[in-house]
Length: 110
Image (cartoon, rainbow, N blue to C red; front, side, top):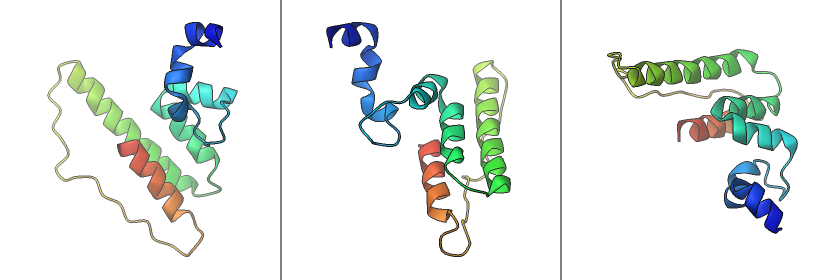
């Protein structure tokens, strides 16, 4: 236990963040997601969603554009903010993944 605390303090302190599937175990995939950041997390979440490739591509492009704007701002470039707050409508039949993707978007934007 002490070796784990010394070698991997984040593993203990951030266990709830690392354990994405909430099964009280940390898998290698979850560690890669934790260390890889948001892009890795997003890909990990998308793996659980069957189909909806076009929507997953749109969400990925949305995330990349936000990160690119942030990088440009950090480098000193004048980047205008969004004219309006981003909004989306998830529409479809029951069981098509609207709530699942809505939750992914909420976590991505939070």
